Each structure stands twice: as C-alpha cells, then as structure tokens.
Length: 391
Ligand SMILES: Cc1ncc(COP(=O)(O)O)c(C=O)c1O
Image (cartoon, rainbow, N blue to C red; front, top):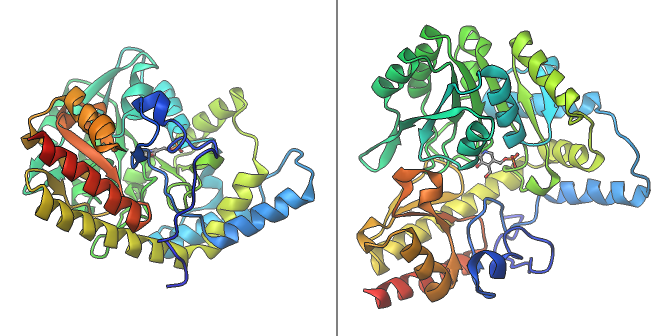
C-alpha cells in the first residue's frame, strides 16, 4: 500500500458539509457523520501538488480550458472504460445536479412526466419537481438481495407518454453496477419509445472486483444518439467541493442545447482549481483509486460481518460498487423519526435516513463507507449497541 487510508484527519471546523453541521442537522454536537457522499480520505497527492502550485501563483484571474485537460478526460475513459470520447463531445458543467436540472428543463415539457428508478439519490426528485415536471416512478424490484429494473412497468410509463429518463448508473443507493445486458434492454426500450436518457455516471469508477461499469452511450451509436452522459472526477477522487463536472453527448443537437443553456446562465466559465485538480487526478490518480477501492472493500466486508454478528435483524444489500451501503432496518420496527432518534440521539451516529430516497427507502439507512476503518468500527459499535439497548 502506498497510501494510508487509516489516517484520521480532523475535518471539524474546516467548513465541512459532513462534519460541521451536527448541531444544525442532528441537534447533537458529537455525532459521527457517515452520511453525505464525500470521503474522509485526502485526494491523490498529485491533486494537492497542482493546487499548491496554483495557489502559489497568487493570481486567480479568468481561466481557459486547455487541450491537455480534455485529453486527460479522453485518456481516462479510454483506459478505464474502453470508451472513445471525442473532445468536442465534452461540455463542462458546474455539477452533475446542474446538468440534470438543465436536462429536465430542456428535454421535457412543463408538467410532463420524467422517469426515475426509485429509491434514488434525492436530487433526482428535486430537479424534476423544481422545474415543474412530474416524477414518474419506476420502482426498482428487490430480488435475491439486489435491485433490478422493472422493464414492464417502465414500458407502461413510456406508453403513457414519458419522454425523458434520468438513469443513475451505477445506482445510488443500493450500489448496483448495472450489467451490460440490463442496460441494453433499457436502451432498446428507450429507442422504441424515443425517450431521451440522461445518464448520471458519477459513480462509474467506484466498482468492486467482478463488476464492470458500462457507459450507457457505449451500447450502440443509436443509444448514444439519445443519451446525455453526466460525468465527473469529483466522486472518484474526492473533489466534490471543487464543484466541477462535464457532460458527454454524441448528438450535436442535445449537446448544443445544453451548452447554450449553460452559457445563458453564465455557468460555462472555467475554474483554475477545478481544472487543475481534475487533470492531475485523471493523469496520476489511478493507483490511488485502486488502493482506495480495495480499502473501501475491506470496510464493506467489516461492516457486513459486524452487522451480521451484532445486529442480525438489519440486512445490508451487498453493493457491486460505490462506497455506500444500503441497509434494510425494517425489522427494527422504527419509522423515519424513530430511526433518526436511534441514530442521532442514542447511537450518536448519522447515516442517511432512507425515506429521503423515496417511499421504498422507508425503514432503510445508507452508510458512507469511505472513512478510516476505526471511524467505521466506532460508528457501527455505537449503532448496534444503541439498537440492541432499544429492543
Ligand atoms: C448519483 C449522484 N449524482 C450526483 C451527485 C452529486 O454530484 P454533483 O455534486 O456534481 O452535483 C451525487 C453525490 O452523491 C450522486 O450520488
């Protein structure tokens, strides 16, 4: 191992969304936070190095995007995902959620249904509803301890007129890395009903051995033609506070519409820091990523074993990827309020309460595993002890 993921770095009082909101969100100062999806690991050293160099320059004027930045993206997706992206298919966007929201605005009509497969990352609901569209739910099916897509119900939504689908691939929560055949079946349905697919692939690099991410747009040129892929280095390398992402679209019409809207809102300008970090991470972060995922896999095994031995009523869904663990706590018999009380006030831990991901998530919790093992051990012990005392 070249990197020490066991090292605890105190993030309190660093303006951290995860560590500096305990009182405000949970009403308790000393809660261990394993919720929002950022990691308690420093980014690859090459990232810190370029950011230091940039800071040392002391001048932070307007930036351009360089060929070398686009080349780093292209090389990464070729090497890791066997996806040959042309640089001119890429358009930067401040964040994935920005892209999702703009896509809803541009590729659906006011009041129209937009399909999501639930439970799902909660901003998927927000971007639909805040744009005055209707959520059309295709609930995922829980079969043999993993989520599957319900193609029959999906087809009925398309028959009723839905023309836009927001795909979460890999899936958050639940950690499915959709298999090629599953995506192919989805893609064929979308082609049949002329549905545009906005594919959020922010978790694409976070896969465990035996699971391979398939970029939706690589399934066929026809499928690529109806797809806007939303990508970022931010989840992969723990850069989300730098607020940067990009979209890839082979279809010039879809791409131009997105680019034009980004420009209209003046969201198109480049950031020095974000661009330096993304390029350095893609060029020099592969070893770090592989070690980080091996460490997270160790955390996953630890969590599954510990929960199995100490609180067998709760049942984790083994993820194919992501650093998130979706935990079935329904046998504890607690509603959302009860689960929050158990976590925040009794166990002094903060996982995500599941119902924010949709009604299917009631009785579930989501644990962020991207932290030093000792923090995970402490959090699981506190949670299991409190749950057992609650019985
Ligand atoms: C599926 C998914 N999409 C998007 C995001 C956030 O991306 P951004 O910060 O670029 O909006 C997350 C963060 O957890 C996520 O899990």
